[in-house]
Image 1 (tube, rainbow, N blue to C red):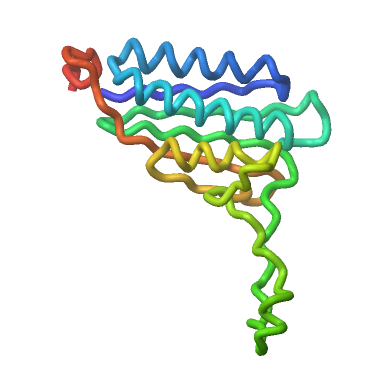
Image 2 (cartoon, helix red, strand yellow; image 1 turned 180 degrees about the vertical axis):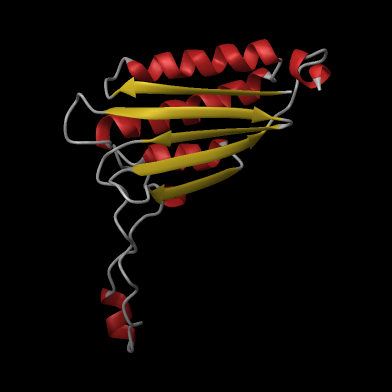
Length: 165
């Protein structure tokens, strides 16, 4: 058996706990281990918060959250209509001398390297840390970003969903 749901939400802060509560309720009802539920709820909250903050120009625009539980995997996808992800700059030529290397600019942090002093930028880091696979891309043919992530599920003893298969 599998479970699938999709929400279209306004880009408002109040939409984030709504999506999180729906996910937690679904996972708890299906019998997913509470630690896995918590990891996915935090990752979903971070992705939704990013969609609310960066997902478009007008507060009236919406974003979409889709969740699939299929077998022992949960996939969550958040799609917005904002500007999307900026392409990474092409790497410049390596410095030729020791003096050039000393002056080389610091690399642009990736989500896996979110600086400890940053006030923003930890959301993608948390999503990567709490899930098993993350994919970031721009929407095809129209503006917007898509963040999807997977997590292998663990089940409570006597869980409803694995027994229904």
